[in-house]
Amino acid sequence: MPIDPAKALAAGPRTGRIAWTRRDVLLYHLGVGAGVPATDPRELRYTLESRLHVLPSFATVAGAGAPGVIDGLSLPGIDVDLARVLHGGQTLTLHRPLPAEGSAVTSGRIAAVYDKGKAAVLVMRTEAADTDGPLWTNDAQIYVRGEGGFGGERGPTARPEPPRGDPDVVVDRRLREDQALLYRLSGDWNPLHADPEFARQAGFDRPILHGLCTYGVTLKAAVDTLLDGDVSRVREYATRFAGVVYPGETLRIRLWRTEGAVRAAVSAVERDEAPVLVDTVVTHT
Image (cartoon, rainbow, N blue to C red; front, side):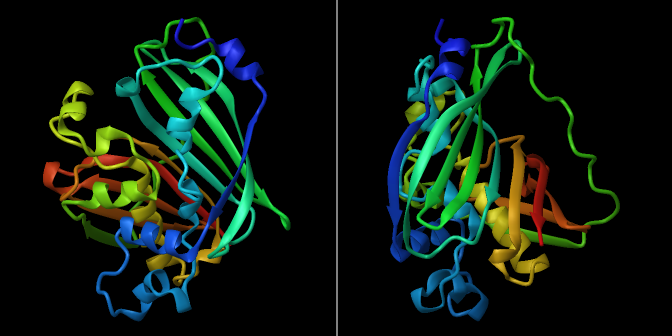
């Protein structure tokens, strides 16, 4: 069987060391759409090294290594076709603000394997710490089509209540035609996001945008509009990927202010506002 749940869960953590510089942070920020308008002081916080603060979602690519959605596929007990893999969701917990330059020790393991019938869901947990202590914990939910039906637990089914009333803010973000090509320079080289033939084999008309790129675009919108531009206020950021995004499309990001959190819903404007991100919550101070 391509997925052996017992073997995957019993495997010890895979540890490693990562490092990043201001250049990596600047490239990531450009990859999630920062710098428009280029001379706006609010954008220069993302694009000028002398003013740089770090969008917390940078943690998903720090070190320019393969993110959990890819790295988890090479762990013991996991042997699946990359063309059958989709990123189902992401939860990022920040233990303190991220430095613009730094290094860390990472520890990654499969934290859960769920049986969804027609698919399996792997939860790949990655923890990072430096000499001052824990930095972040990343949980990537990896959806593998055709690998369910092994009799395992279905996993959590509870979902947050949808936000009520009109959103406090609506932000439209037009993506670049080359957005995926730019974003992949931060470390996710999955050909699904660049190679038309590979995308067709995976069932898509053309290459799709990385889910984690949309994730970063959305967090930036929330920070810039409802968190006073203060990245240090973010404590946790969770979402479920409900649909694909194509480079060149416009994201409509609806944001609701709630007690201690910002709720978000994201859709693709040009496709009748097809859902893209749902169950999205930014918990903050």
